[in-house]
Amino acid sequence: ATANNQAPAQDDGQEIGASTMPERVGKTIQIFLPTGEPRGLRVAELTTRIVQAVLIPRSDLVLAKQRPELDHVAVYYLFGESESQAKPRVYVGQTEDVRTRLDYHNSRKDFWQTVVLGISSTASFNQAHVRWLEWYSIQRVREVGRFALDNDNTPSKPFVTEPMEADLFDSFETLATL
Image (cartoon, rainbow, N blue to C red):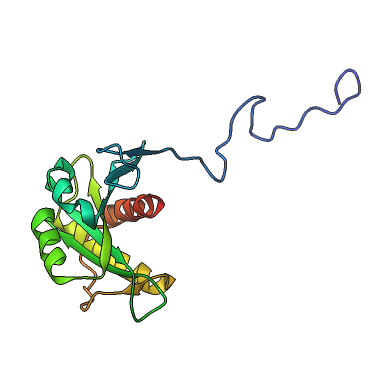
């Protein structure tokens, strides 16, 4: 007890006015519209991360091929409707040559209307990164069941180091948010 017969304040480890990290932290998504058209080509990013999602409507493919974002190594998702299933379809892939790969899919896959590229704005993704992101994305598509998977082949889990895998889980979470 103190001189005025009050019990001393409990020390709960927090100073008065100190902030604690909330369980959920807000995020800021920045979406750039290169053509000014909200339904056209879009480049999205969390402002504190290096991962970008580039959304390209199939109708804007020629225009998009002029963009510098297509110079990056990428994981990509082709989205479209299924004629035989109630779920929309998705094809998951990875490439070091985005333009050539999209030309290939444009001539051989009819179902897709939109592609979303996952890239690193700092060009820090390499083949190991995108192969792992492709593998993990396919696993998640199967687990969640929201889309009918259009991939014929299932890649095996590529080797990445434990620190790289931790970073890739974070990259995947960022892409999923975008």
